[in-house]
Image 1 (tube, rainbow, N blue to C red):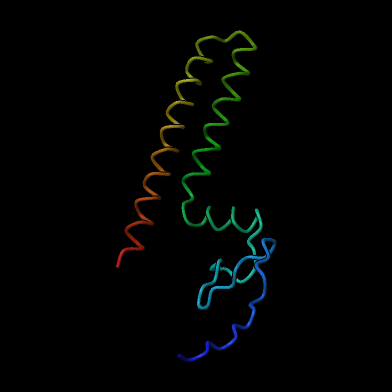
Image 2 (image 1 turned 180 degrees about the vertical axis):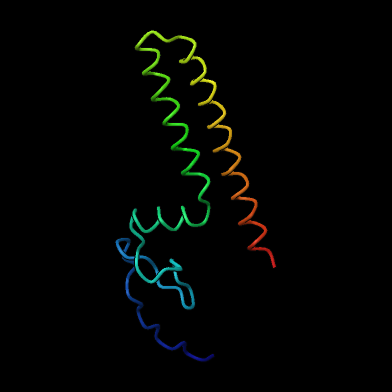
Length: 106
C-alpha cells in the first residue's frame, strides 16, 4: 500500500475577501460605476423614462399648486395628466426592457 503524500495546507478562507475563481470577473466594468455615470448611461439607453418621470413630477407639482390655490377643475385635470404621464413612464420602462432583451439575444 502506497503512503499518501502530505497535503499542503491551503490558505484559510477569509470572509472579508471574495473568493478567487479562475476566469471569473465579478464586474464587467474595470472600475466601479458611480451614480452620475450610471444615470447618464441609463438615460442614453432609454431616454423616454427620465422624460416621463419629469412629466409626472411636473403634473403632480402643478396639480398640487392648483389645488392649493382653489382651482379644483385644473387640479383634477393635472391629476389625470399625472396618471397619463405615469402610464407613459411604465410603458417606456417595459419597452426598454423588451428592446434590451431582444438586443441581447443571438
